[in-house]
Structure formats: C-alpha cells, structure tokens
Image (cartoon, rainbow, N blue to C red; front, side, top):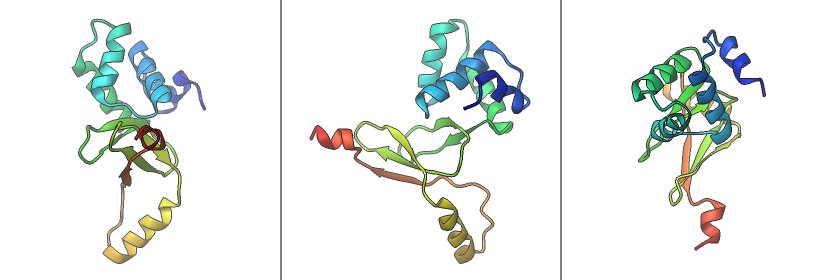
Length: 136
C-alpha cells in the first residue's frame, strides 16, 4: 500500500498532521466511525475540534480518498476507497469486515432490471461473525 503522505498528495490534499493521522487510523482499523476517530485524534491532538475532523473527512471524501459507508441500524463508518466489495457486519460485536466478491455482476443485473445507471452502491450483509459464534 502507498505511503500515507503519498496518498494525500495523489488526491490533491495538503499533507497535515491531522490528515496523516486520519489516514493512518483508517489503514489501521479499516473502518472507523467519527466518534472513535475523534477519540483517537484527541490523544495526539488535544485541541482538535470535532468540526475540524468533519471538515477533513469531507475534503477526503470530495477528493476521492475515502468514502462513508452507511450501515443499517448502525453509525456510518469511513474507509479508504478500494476495489469494489461488500461489507459484513456482526450483529453482536458490530465489527465491519470487507468481502471481495463479484459485486460488478450484482450492479449490472440491478441496472438491467431497474433501468437505473448506478453511480454508487453499498452492499451490506448482517449476521454473527465467527468469533461471536464461538463464544455462544
């Protein structure tokens, strides 16, 4: 994976300590909600405001570096943009995992059946993860 500063520059974003930390947190966690991200940011940048975090997140979305993943019955999470994939969400521990499958065929079929030109998709499947199943 590319370096953090290189990713920011590639997406025409100024390299700042806060943006570097946000990208590093996304690389580390894969998916993170705004409250958890803010909590992590406060450890390193005690004076950072939630508004600053939102501003940076929105600029990164606008520049195509990250995306918001809207999850049913859960808070939205953010992730670095990567190849098409779907999300698995555990109903017990709320972990979010990526699964790379042939989402292109699903989208093509949906376009054909509906007549829509699909510009964005978030496919989410809910269930119980293997770790939570093991503790039942």
